[in-house]
Amino acid sequence: MLVDETTVRLAAFAVVFAAMALSEVVAPRRPRTYSRMTRWPSNLAIVSLNSILVRILLPATVVSLALVGAKRGWGLMNNLPVPAWIAIIGSVVLLDLAIYLQHVMFHAVPALWRLHRMHHTDLDFDVTTGARFHPIEIVISMLIKLSAVAALGTPAASVLFFEVLLNATSMFNHGNVRLPGRLDRYLRWLVVTPDMHRVHHSIVVDETNSNFGFNLPWWDRLLGTYRAQPAAGHEGMTIGIEQFREARELWLGRMLLQPFRGPAGRYAIGRRSAA
Image 1 (cartoon, rainbow, N blue to C red):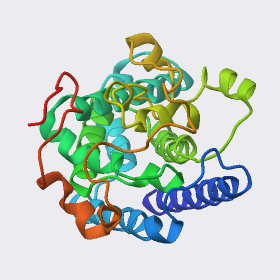
Image 2 (cartoon, rainbow, N blue to C red):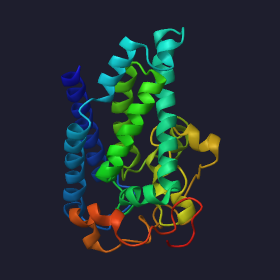
Image 3 (cartoon, one colour):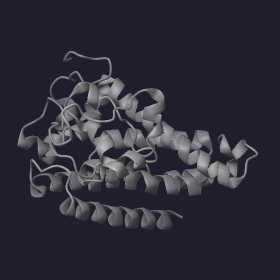
Image 4 (tube, one colour):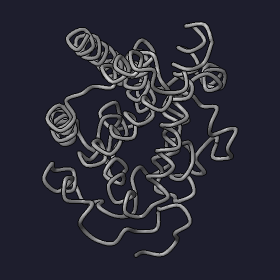
């Protein structure tokens, strides 16, 4: 299962990444501020570093944990008398809610925001931004995901599907691609679109603290964190946060040190003065 899981995830990542990168060339939504050669090496290096780190520190994958949980009767779904298809669909929806709540938490707690803000300090918004997370945040996120899988008793099939779906939609909704307006309006009732998630990467604090969903858009609408459009429009909005705006902050070494440099800033939810 481990080999199959790795193969499926890598294949899905490669296909979706290539499709989104090509789409950004054919139909870009915004002009680039920095070239790919300036940003992509560091963003892709983070992906490799995070993958290696997770394999070393957390060798048990979420799929393998789900298999163990099924054998031992752990969690909600393993103790509910429901058909397998309901357990699978229900688990995917509940895992997505867990990821939404985790994302809100990383914006609400200043110490966690210090880690998460590296994702927001990218000075452009494209497919590579979707995988640009600090290694410490990745480890914490994996621990939260492992806990959620154990508590929910998530079937292994649901976990694998959710992992592939989450990676794919993260690359999709971070894409610098132009969708027809009508298609975007309908599509964002089913999945987070690039225009919907781009608002979350605005320099404006209230816009940064909105549209937390990565996959399903329902949680933002139901829990009051949805914002349809940025105030300045998608072409006029500024990507990033108020800190770390020099081009050298796109270098890998400086990115890794960002959580430990400068004040926490005013982006943590409920916090409006630098700390």
